[in-house]
Length: 81
Image (tube, rainbow, N blue to C red; front, side):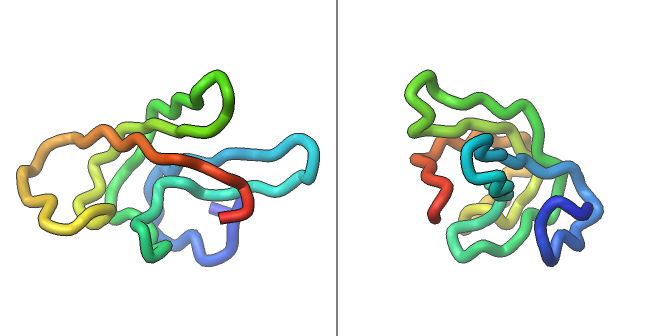
């Protein structure tokens, strides 16, 4: 819970660490940077580093997620986001 500021959800999150800059970024957040309200796991990063994928039990990462199922998220990724 101490890798990034304001990590208060007490759930497993997905982080990416840039070995060049030393920056650590949490990627298991909503588009508005709201932290997930459930556990996220199973990170995968594309070979070129441009995309991340992970599974999550959080229901607030996207609007209208009411199916009560684990979701898989794939998103473009840049450390400077």
